[in-house]
Amino acid sequence: GWDIPIAADHFGHFDIEDAIKMAQALDPFNLAWLEDMIPWDYPDDYVRLRNACKTPLATGEDIYLKEGFLPLFEKKAISICHPDLATAGGLLETKKIGDLAMDHGIAMAMHMAGSPLLLFASAHCAAATENFLALEHHDADTTYYENLVDGVPKPFVGKDGFVQVPNGPGLGISLNEEAIKDAIRRDGKEPDKLYFPPTEEWNKERSHDRPWS
Image 1: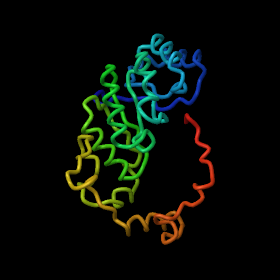
Image 2: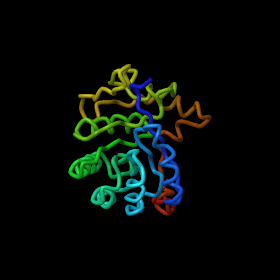
Image 3: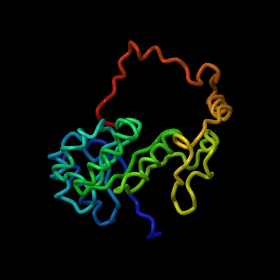
């Protein structure tokens, strides 16, 4: 229905000319935003793209720390920043990113494609950030997802589309260890070996992370 805004998620990495053509072709559909049309570290191209279309632009799920967002903010290159609390630097850093965005007249929609721990950490951050717009959530229909933690109302997302922010100690949730181990078994793996396993391999292996998705 008309009450639900629709956004377009993650186009990949067009060159700027193709991104402009795609954005202009999508303008008539009045989308809430276009996400990650080009790599985030080309702020001048984002300015070109923003000036060429009417639909708001969003990016930022791959940016680490608020300093990475600053060129986009200073150039007014985007309408919406899109940090992921798990990779942007944590709860406090993401709050700082939101506050910095607000100083530049930019909203914050948060990327979130992780466990219930990340969901509720993001909900706390969102509730504390004045320019918060929306929180991404990929597991609303995953059958075992809401069993992984206790101490919060279920379903996590109410009929009105909101997540209730827990008011208990810490994040306000507790791990359901048996449910987590059952989920590991469901994937055909051995829970005793994979429930908080050691990760010595990362002491010597490089992650080979890319600065973009």
